[in-house]
Length: 83
Image (cartoon, rainbow, N blue to C red; front, side, top):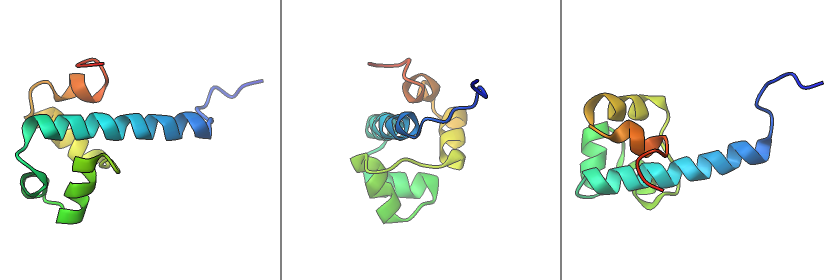
């Protein structure tokens, strides 16, 4: 019997990779480069470059900031904005 909890490690990893691509697309569409990203989100240059390159994605604080301050961010980051 299933507990109804999300438990597939493969699904979680796949979603993380998909979200990293979405985040990278969002920042490419809204910022001039990694330095601009670092300045706006108050993160170090390495973090901003990793986001820019799609190597990793942010934790909740940056996603919430994007949702609150950038029109259309929710659609892009949830996969509704573009394929």
